Image (cartoon, rainbow, N blue to C red; front, top):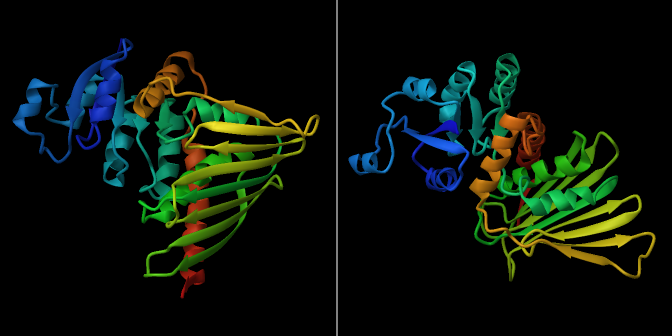
Length: 299
């Protein structure tokens, strides 16, 4: 069994449950930098009094929240040759991600980045159908989310995985109908290999939507990320589209992420989401934010 610990009490519950349901992990306990863990938790799990104690007792560590205040601890864990899982890095700066990349290569450790979709079996099936993308269209309607840039950042990671290339040029239009908060974002991406991507995100709509449409050289693939089904129209038989779907296997997102993390540590398998992909997404997102400052139209 692999000895593993968690840093950060906030959002730790899904990972604690995933570890307990796995026969491959031995949960050693939690260290919270705020030191605000109540005594009631000491009956549920071990509480480390220092990060050094956790590093000395674990083979791997999970950082359960996306907060760059934990960046020094992530660096320290890598320097201790621990394998690291970080729930998210959207709050990190590009220079911090580049530093983590250098530390990872020096220490020869595994650094896995959590993502809502990339580690899912449905996205893996979808990606297999997108062999030579020419055009990628993403559309999201999410009334409950005011942070459209965060949604765009998540889609950037997906599009980079589908296009298999870095972003060459970015164009952005941002609109607001009611306030200074953006209500709609339109992003056009030109990739180094000639693929074109478009991201359309809206705050208001009748229902939540999340679809991705990919035009390949010889097929069109349309995925509904919420319903978890896709339609493939092939050039060989365009009048008879193939509809595929995949039911959830009951595993939580944390269980899926940690299973991939474990496999990469033990079998040296490819990570579903790594620092390189997140750095490319971060660079593109910085250009989106810069364009937003110039093109923010308020009606």
